[in-house]
Image (cartoon, rainbow, N blue to C red; front, side):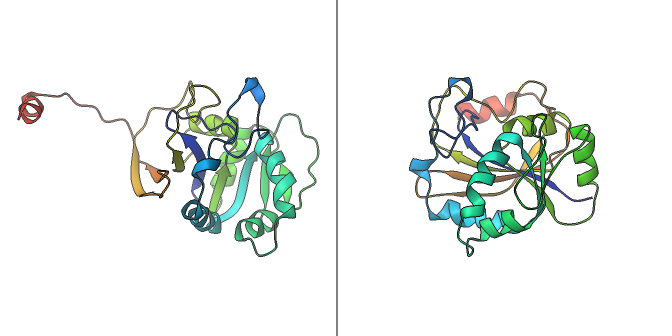
Length: 211
């Protein structure tokens, strides 16, 4: 079995909608498209290149597929992210698309959870999901995500599509890597760490905070 890895640009309040531009995703009347752009710089780009390098193939929702398919085939041939996306297999989960024009892309057939579980059960490198918030919520509810890579921008929007929604499976995540960029963006990697652990604050805690 190989890892299913989700990479998301997110705000402090968990919004993942339209980080890259005003027209990227205006569904629901979302007015804040492009919120990541003021914080984007070389540190984020280098980290993205490193993350993409480990992907054997990609799993995308319809909206992210259409954004990527319109942009990445026109990118320079020496762009390592473009090379990865343009040359490696892409699995697209969509209820509305009937055909795909991007080379190497194919539609996920049948039940998406079962199809993704079968892809994850294969041997090989990472199965990567980028963006695709609706698909990611489905995968999180099905407990299929092994690793989260979050690019957290220091901004709060108060509205928009969220990383975690209703029905997310309770669980613990372990921070395995983190860094901060000069613009205040956090680059965080989390891996699944089992069930939620709980406890109770006792007298030891009260003594500690009281000095």
